[in-house]
Length: 312
Image (cartoon, rainbow, N blue to C red; front, top):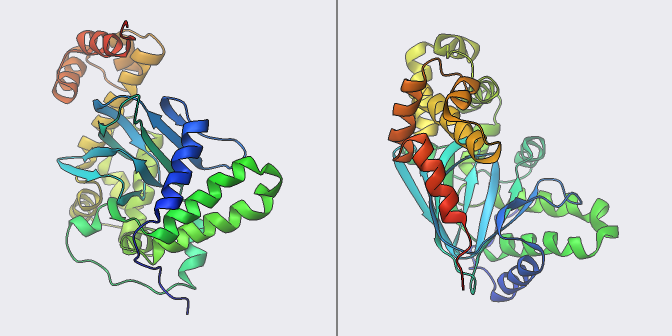
């Protein structure tokens, strides 16, 4: 049986190396995804921001400079340079970058999770003790960032400068990263989601179905039946994983997508409301205001104003 990961803190050399690589490659704004290494994401943000809504896909995210706050339902996770974030299924969240500036930007790297690879590694790596609190069962959690995990990310990024070695070495380094996660602080979470006959896995499949059809009327009974659970059991496990009810989850997906449509495609509020499944523009406006703190038109105008460059 393979030995667990070292608990030693991250090596300064690996962190400095990743910072240098990100400063050379990453551009301020949304995550970049180098096509040479599928699943890898590079992040650079030059100024703090508050309450940006997005959907996190299953991934592990590491901050090498700065800090972040992620709100999942009514709960908030804060993490920075000493911890990583794991999202084990698609999750609608609100995020805030707390520490960032042009002189010292927020820098991070993320890797999409490969469930087949993780399931294969589960046969070889020792299982950590399972947590028994509701927080331990969330689909999103943080873990202590160790030196071996950070060094593996450094080696993965280094391959971008050696593209001829990517086909042979990138799969090996990704596998090492998954292994370090499995035997690390948040390993129990990954094992529960990856175990096919677990209730967490069944709810994860239902959540994937909900993500694919979030514009359609919600049929919680159908999701529960497809998961092989009673309605009450399904509700319990869904909220345990996501910190939201199925209806709250769908509502956050809809409002997040509507905001994206207004910002990136220039849609008006009514059109975006109908596009994401609302039948009543007034209901959409009320729920949008509760979530974002302002009516759609004002929120979009304020957001665009904040993105305008400041004159020297």
